[in-house]
Length: 214
Figure 1 (cartoon, rainbow, N blue to C red):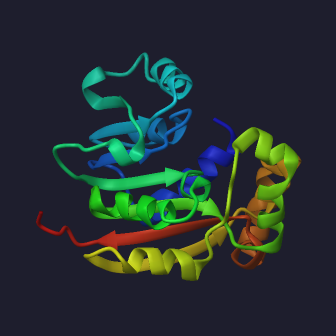
Figure 2 (cartoon, rainbow, N blue to C red):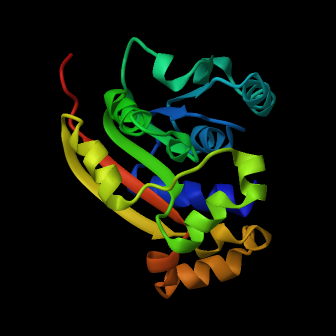
Figure 3 (cartoon, one colour):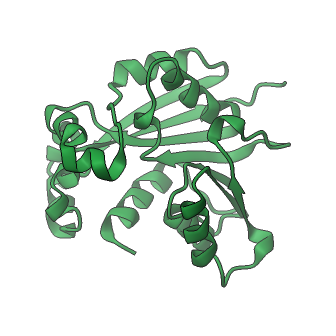
């Protein structure tokens, strides 16, 4: 897989290990992160996406895997209502596409579906990330995007019961430079010396959840 996918997965699983866990990805897209979760020992992965194209890509990716270990759900995230919660609920490149009241609602949906950990990977609220999200080429490729500030996502999470801990990690300094997305050495070095922690184009928000009855 491309460096970007693997790097996000490394950061995600450093805060929310997936081995032996049930894992849910909302807005799964290509399904590559969930595929890595399955290959890293997840007990079962569930992928939710409303796009028929995304589901087709996921089906192709998982074609050689045991069908008992994964589920593909062609559903809108808000309409997805499983019979049980998941150990780890995550999304990458999803929450920033929502506007208005849908922004706290999509954050809350992650928490409602989790019994332990939620991970949100989203563009950082930096000048460069905000500029990148508004570039005409980025809008054509990814649609509307509005980065979450830490204070905004904290307010959204404050509306959710059962939150135990919230951690924000800024990383991936060249997220805003597409030509350098896969410059592994440069991204790792800049993260290591601290540049990524202040200027990284991606933020990983990790939330520990206490399961709330009902």
